[in-house]
Length: 100
Image 1 (cartoon, rainbow, N blue to C red):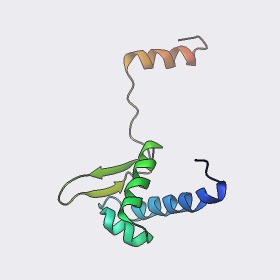
Image 2: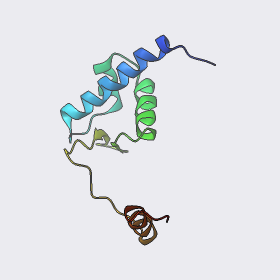
Image 3: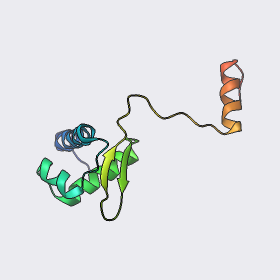
Image 4: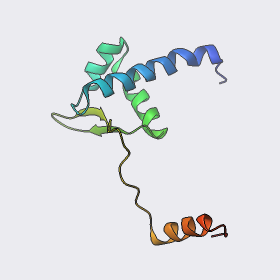
């Protein structure tokens, strides 16, 4: 099924609102039901959007079970980068102008 750009705009806007709700309350956890109520959509829509955002690399954190919920890593700086020895060697080779 091919979606038009016009059909995607409300989805993108909703996901942006979802990110902003999570950022405004971080690091506090919000339930999918609470997020759904705030956005005026179903819990299933929120869960689907959260999954899509996580797949896209948005740092959404989900904790399951009683007292669980969703939040976003809203730190102003990303966490430290951890590389394997091979990855570090490849980056060093690129920095020096060579091929890995």
